[in-house]
Amino acid sequence: MTTTTTTRAETGAPEAAAPAAGDAKDAAAPFAPPRLAERARAIAANPQEWVHRVRLDPQGRWYERLHQDADHEIWLISWLPGQSTGFHDHGGSAGAFAVALGTLEEHRVRARREVGPGQARSFGPDYVHDVRNTSDAPAVSVHVYSPPLSTMRRYDVDAGGELVRLAAESADDW
Ligand SMILES: [Fe+2]
Image 1: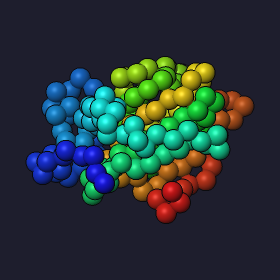
Image 2: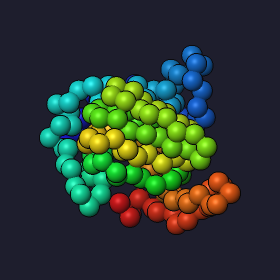
Image 3: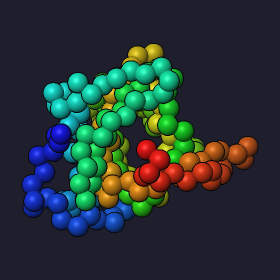
């Protein structure tokens, strides 16, 4: 099943774009981070596309792929309180996530921000973050990656506050 309404005109070659918020030209590119955020927000705002895929699993985040094509993929993630991704990157993919229900926190090594319902974050390749449900209620979020994820690396943070690379995961692992 696909939830996409993407047209052929929108599925040009993915951009290997760095984040360029505010740059009108890059913001209009098909798969630049601002467009990924727009797409994630649009799906998050339309519960009929995902509400039947929500599942709250005490064992860990529940994630389901809503769509995949050569240019991008879309995942739905359901979070119970306390569940988190751990620090990770997205290989060479750019991405965005939008909160559909509840509130998440995005942690970077030296910063964190709350992402509430209807809000989104976007990022270019090589971006590292840890997304957590630190609230006391479940949360649901929509994640868009372009190109589709092929590798992800996990990180720890050492005593000095520096990222330490851990294992790499490939698309075969998820
Ligand atoms: Fe991520």
